[in-house]
Amino acid sequence: MNILLTGGAGYIGSHTAVELAKAGYNVIIADNFCNSSPKVIKRLEEITGKSFALYNIDVADKNALRRVFKENQIDAAIHFAGYKSVGESVKVPLCYYRNNIDTTLSLLEVMEEFGCRKLVFSSSATVYGTKAPVPYKEDMETGNCANPYGWTKLFIERIITDYSAANSDFSAVILRYFNPVGAHESGLIGEDPRDIPNNLMPYISKVAVGELEKLSIFGSDYPTKDGTGVRDYIHVTDLAKGHVCALEYAEKHAGTEVFNLGTGKGISVLEMLRAYEKACGNKIPHEFVPRREGDLAEYYADSSKAERVLGWKTELSVEDMCRDAWNWQKNNPKGYEE
Ligand code: NAD
Ligand code: UD1
Image (cartoon, rainbow, N blue to C red):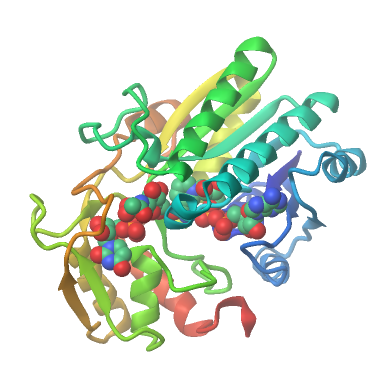
């Protein structure tokens, strides 16, 4: 089967490409490299021993996308392409609405033209907004998103759900990711942020490798186990495997189904820091600073639906996440640029 990965050169897309290739799928990647490197393709081939068709296109460009569908019999698409920086989305909201929604509309329209009826979409726990009680469950109310990025995810979920309701042969799986971290065990692919990272794990990695001076821990007075923020960190390889299960599900069921992909366990900033220190064998300089605006104290997934319906659950531990993040960081201190 031929699977199109929009944004397949990115962090989660590249790890998913590996798991799909391992499961016997033929992977076609469409990416404009606005937040990734073409060098990832060689690494994918090195890991899997397989080849990957690559289209350097803007996924919002329908003519370019038509060429991909004309040249390949695409059986299903996984839609990763989009902008993902929360802070940036607050500064340039129109860019976020334009790119994230346009790519989705173009993809759905071209899929329709070519009779492609299966879609998996990368959504986020951010759609549960700022008022939901933990653990988050798929049938909880969504909305109250804290930023434009979150709203793009919610709007896209709506678009996909409406489209699928109007087309009874269409199958959509919406995956709400919690906090993806870590890297492939080979150390050949991983997260490669272009600027100073906003997220915890890549920030710790840059401090561990000596590129940044110290970690600022945002808040030490949250009502959590040790006062620092608690999240549901999930190894990117476990997350990638979730996409293989989602595709298998989409092959057999029409309609839209939503799944949380998380471990179901909350880990604090301090717990993550300690685990990373163990993995890299060094102390990681840090200081406590005031809370970051817009942050929640604690959230994690109820992932029992994915386990029950998809037969998927996470297998890798926080130690595995830190070991693999460090392995990637130390072997590639400048990401894909070396
Ligand atoms: P990423 O930035 O590494 O990957 C996205 C890829 O899409 C990049 O390779 C980028 O070049 C490409 N892209 C963006 N706009 C494009 C366009 N118009 N045409 C073609 N390619 C385009 O991000 P990621 O972490 O791999 O995330 C993948 C998806 O998962 C995104 O939709 C993101 O919002 C979602 N998500 C990510 C996280 C996370 O923490 N990483 C959490 C929840 C959801
Ligand atoms: C952030 C986004 C969220 C997005 C997710 C993707 C915000 C407000 N939220 O979530 O919408 O879906 O990334 O993974 O940006 N922390 C520090 N110091 C740092 C960085 C983070 O202490 O330098 C803390 C945070 O306060 C938080 C935890 O680490 O408690 C995780 O932060 P982060 O990795 O940014 O993820 P989220 O805030 O969960």
